[in-house]
Image (cartoon, rainbow, N blue to C red):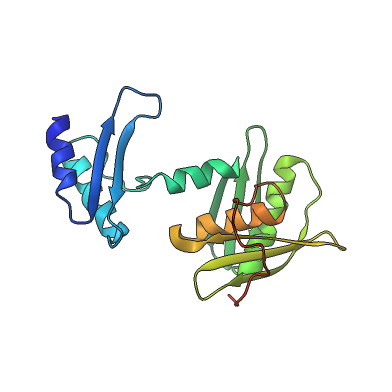
Length: 192
């Protein structure tokens, strides 16, 4: 069955290569995409095959290609949930021992501030103030934070969605996530 599944995934348009490793701790199916592939179409086709083979449940909520999203979530060090509620949003940060949430207006700056406050409570630190949230034309989400005297900022690419990009950018702005090496540290551009 393994070989047939790998062959079927390999036949999906946009798939460059497939490897199946179930003997290692980090086991799984690794799919490398062609440069011109539509990631969402490939993701849906892979998910459908995994469901057909009985390897995956019909719920598509956590299937990831390229491991980029799981690495980004691991960098957070906490679980972050942002959900709409009537009249705003519920922002929740879940650490190993502390869980904190805020109900905030549904604006980018308010959501970023709520995330900062909840995250700071989980870590037992004084929260910074979010002064600006921007989105550049090339999809770079920037967040600027201040302690009253010094501004710091973080950014993240929205390629994997704003619900992952916003926590990454906030985490970098408040200093709980390292900024990737070689990234541009200039001032974020654009407006959201």
